[in-house]
Image (cartoon, rainbow, N blue to C red; front, side, top):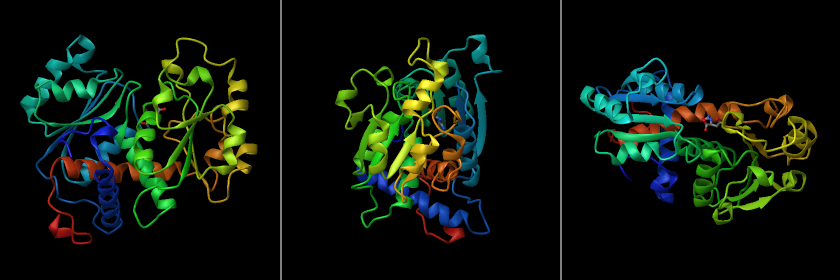
Length: 319
Ligand code: NCD
């Protein structure tokens, strides 16, 4: 594995499965009386967030703290970035304070790659979402959540049918998930209005549909995406009501899911727009499991990149 995690493309199938397995092992230990492990004691993880975030930032922070790393939270608002400091100066400052890992979220696609390739910093760079490009740890936590519901001998997702529904155009979550879930053997169908599909989607390893009602009954997993109004400068659909009617997970559609199917959403949710409140809170909704798994996946990624000592499940002192 590379010393950075910038894209799902950085992982082959075996490496992705190894991260899922490590996350599960860490989960077993975290369920015990001692949540905190000494693995990354003395290491420094910087959360460098140029874009708003709730879940992802606190998830990385919790993960790093559970591994006993020191965590510095840096958000662009209220920092010298708002005074015009460049990414280069910010990176050099982080280098000078001795960061071992930098978790970066940025509105520009390619920002994590830029930081990793720049030579400004020797830390491991982890992409926590770059523009509309990628969000690899989200895809990993989604894969873990799916695998927990549909376990098999190979530890992958072979044969599972997954629909990713909604604002694919603006979604780094969709792109990373298509790459990872197909690598793990799932069949992915994208469901969206034509205006919310990106140019070049034909080359993605996923089929496409404009008809959610037709797709729903055969799916094992239905992943709803947030309508990203903050990235929309144009009109992409006639009205919120029309959008929900055609592409929302309504109560009626919820009732047409297979009994074993699960409902996912990366959050934050627009209840009543892409997902009804009843669907978000339904028994087969795994939204909060996704959040919990997020911590385990980020622990596993930090552990893997920063070269924590080998894992021996259940044995506190070896970690
Ligand atoms: C996603 C993101 O920021 O890309 N959220 C997240 O990380 N949990 C999806 C979104 O903002 O809709």
